Figure 1: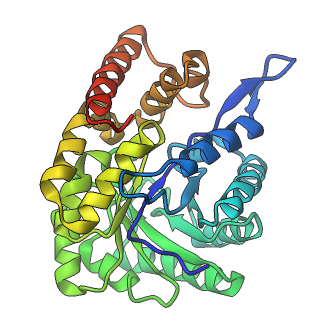
Figure 2: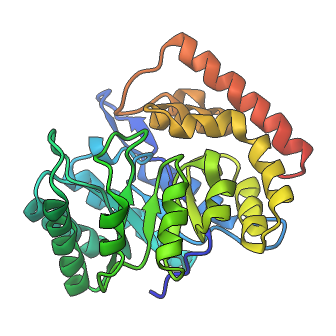
Length: 317
């Protein structure tokens, strides 16, 4: 698939349910239903989400077994094909060999691009080791007919940071079609764009969508956009046109909840807010991750309510 990167893409949640035995399992039909609902939404300018990100950080990637992940992505690939958008998923491993195996699995599941995170090791590998890790992922993806997107996310997710020098090297690999930069330090994006103005960089933190666009990012992957898709798509429309004042109005409207996207518990926080938005707070609290305290629950509820009021006032609910 020829992927267009000057868009915003939703990192959809994996909806869970209780089985008859009381065990928690993936609710495939509801996950597909919500993903499709987001992809249907148009911004004020008539554009829609340009891709579908499944089994990422917000999709509980690190908690799913290999079998669960593949089954989930096969289900989401049906939605992606129906709406003619690329399916993207994350991958991380301790070794490059383990990573290559995951990339092959994701390709067979219908994934078009793999967001490759740095190695899941306690000690930071050298840049040479990091490069070999991504290089094998790239060659494996190329052989499977898909692409990769190196994913720098040192802030909330706690992965090893990729140096700007390493990111520039990775960007030259044949099957690296874009980079995802999930950090509030958008100067990294600007530095990379100065080095190569043709770079395709996606912002990964909702609070800095506008600033990342100013720095040269062509699009973004959003969590808050799963909750307020019309606002998120419209904001990207303004960013793409350089209409910074209008884009910033929307960013400010969603700021109370976008703040949660840069926190270590972003999955748990945003999934609960999504549950509230769809009148299913109990479902929003159902996660393989950490359980929220009552204080955290009330904080998320207050942030969601404020953002909803502001988004509605802009006619973007």
